[in-house]
Length: 324
Image (cartoon, rainbow, N blue to C red; front, top):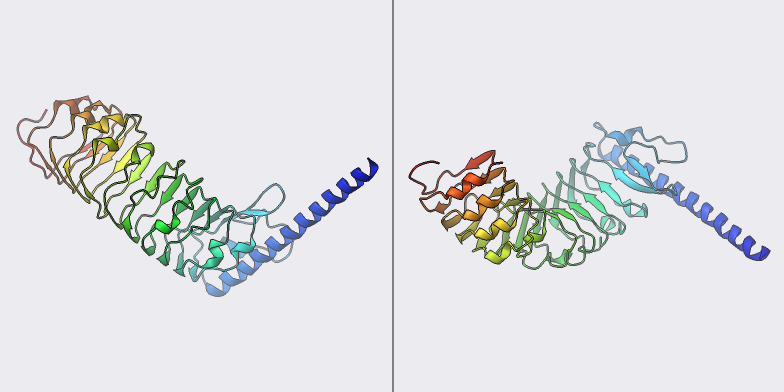
């Protein structure tokens, strides 16, 4: 037993030493990052400028966080006046799980170094000038991905189902992304929030949207009719935006299955027939936008049941008769 205890003690001692060394390595990477950013941006600096050259632990530096062992796992450089190409040694922060580079002016394409940050759970690159193909298929631990307001182009199918396992929120809005999304999210069983708006996606709407909390797909090139099966029993949608696409036909009254819906926008499409009376059974609905479609003259009395409604826009349709 004494020998076992000695071996155990030696093991934990070696483990502590290893963690100290890795922590020092993280500090070196951050100082290298600081020097890189200062060189790239000689005038306007962000919070990283306060990182001290001396000292041991970076865990209390601005925008930096650490796990229980002292490894850097959190890095927030959002709105830090960063411009030009991205730093290419972030993967040396091998414990990094949260990375926020949003609201800067980072340019160029996604480089392989970022794709090697394999433990990332949260990645926010929104509001930058990043271009090229979006490929983060190696980041299998992602829970949140936000690349909105960039210049990504092409399809996104290479990322799925590779990043599906833990993904709960994805925001791809305001890029130049194209192609069909049919079936892409089928294996993303934890997915709740999807924003695809302001792109050039095509095809029909994904038939799994009823299991989401939010689905935003406005300002795309989606087309086709929407099946009543899209809004299945137990629909979890709270927000649905299909505005400014090329959908046509009757909008299904099965939308009533989405009892928790508070926002519905289908403006600027080619829907016709009557307004689905099922909308009247969604008592928590607060905003309803039906503008610029081809709905019939009669407004169903069931809409009177939407007692929580705060905003209603039915302009640019074929409605007539008395207003209830």
